[in-house]
Image (cartoon, rainbow, N blue to C red; front, side, top):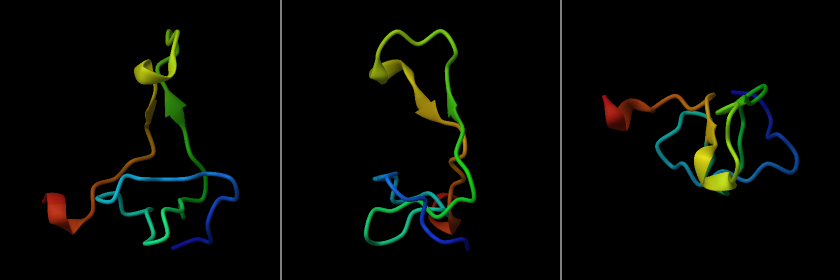
Length: 54
């Protein structure tokens, strides 16, 4: 796993890139929904479910 992405807080505990101090360790992130008009319409497209989901 990579080092944390500075300034990115992650609460998605079932994501493989989430660490226990709520940091994102993905090499990069992609936030999706091109037509979003507020934050509730966006999502992290980098999310990958850890083994707990499978």
